[in-house]
Image (cartoon, rainbow, N blue to C red; front, side, top):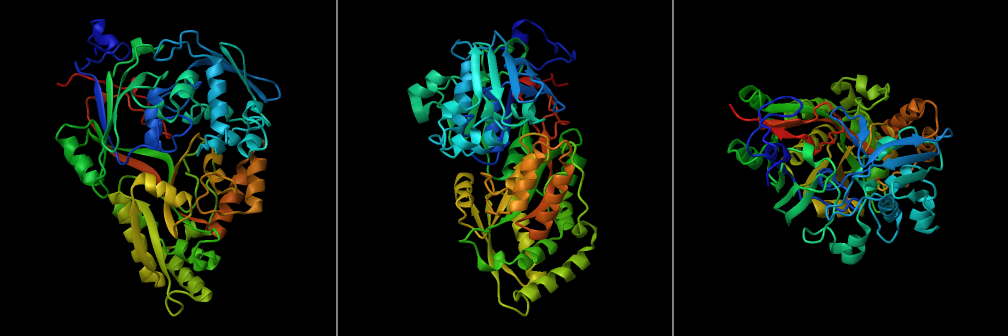
Length: 529
């Protein structure tokens, strides 16, 4: 399939004037098979990347992360902040030619909160403060009571239970994307297969070989198809980062992750290809604080000791080395409007942290000189995750006398195991669903769908509830971070910067978007010299 630009005999980019490559394809590596390409079911970053190509929501993001029109040309907000009225563009089409209607959004949003679907992201709709969402998710009200209506084909109205300043930002999230009702109803659980799926994004799903590859191609019905340049996008599942690098250097990939510990070498050897991109993401470890969790980990002194004994500088500088930053709190400092809290642990030397850690675990009666303690660390299969788990185990053994064993699982099994609390300690990572601190701190509230530690603190719940309507929520966020540091339901390890190798011919990557919400339709390849 020729791109619209090639078909129009335009050899240069219409905006930048760059000479375009004759072949416009984008092939990239992913670590694991995605969870789903169903907007209301997908729960991982890899899957959301695909969904942003196949579907389009009300609003999109530009290269800097600012809101720009999607299916909606814009929106109006009522004076009390409780009603959002979105106007849909009249040329938005599904891949089968049907118009994209406001009722399609109503259907999708009700589907997201419907207990019958049991979406792992239903809680996100509750966070959006949509009227009656919480009661519907709890099974106390029918899904038709959700505060969404379609007065006509091009008007989508959302009623909130309370004002939410960042509500519009949340509509860029995949959970809020529309689905084609007739297709979902006809095919049920198989509606996302290539032979069945109907989508409204810039691309359609052509091929999916589980655990191997997923291919999407241009959607001729997309409203802005004429300005899309990349014709075909392929994601390849490559579990090993070193194999990914080998295939990249062989010219098989346009993008791959830099293997752990190799960024400095690669950036020196390939200065025009290696790049470190700061991201709105946190890497951490969950303690299992549920009733079935290890007894020793219920003791806050043990958790505090383990937190103190983590030498984060070693992990970010020696194990990873691609621009990551040590994390002593959960919310990344790059989060919009967020002020880094003053936490004592961050200002201590590692020697002082270790001394305090030894005193705490000794007081608790474990570790060196106390009751032996052995903990299993669960992570999803990846060299970097393994290297971090090994480093943590060595730190805890040397400083505290804690023995660790490692357990790795493939992505889907790992998600189920962690979500069912069948672990002692488990790797966690969170990338912001929108650029505001609550996207991180809501995860430690009692009812969060991703509170895998099963931590519960009434003060945290109250502070986060009050933050949603506070003129200045920062004091609430500061206090929640302080509570996390005191009670340690999780151990923050580092805040992300992703090291990538990029084909120098590939242009348009949104390096300044800290959420890294990228769209293949914004990418293009320039002609090689």
